[in-house]
Image 1 (cartoon, rainbow, N blue to C red):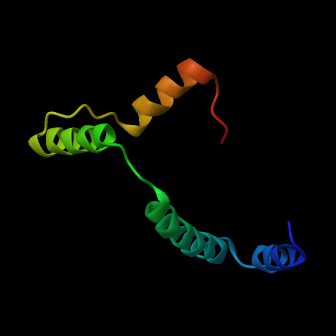
Image 2 (cartoon, helix red, strand yellow):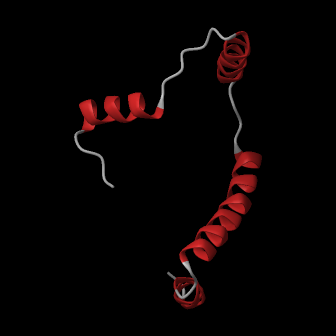
Length: 82
């Protein structure tokens, strides 16, 4: 980690939890925007995404509750961290 990054992290750690969350979200948004520009999806992935969106729009898509997802993760990987 560069000295500038370390200083920024130290300053960020002095913020309240809500302020840190807001800052983290804002930083992530900038990273995510740049990542989207770098992603090139194959025609097959584009077709798969389109199909899943259409299924969801029709109400045919398979959905799981948060609890179901967590249960499946626990079954596969063991206890989840808090």
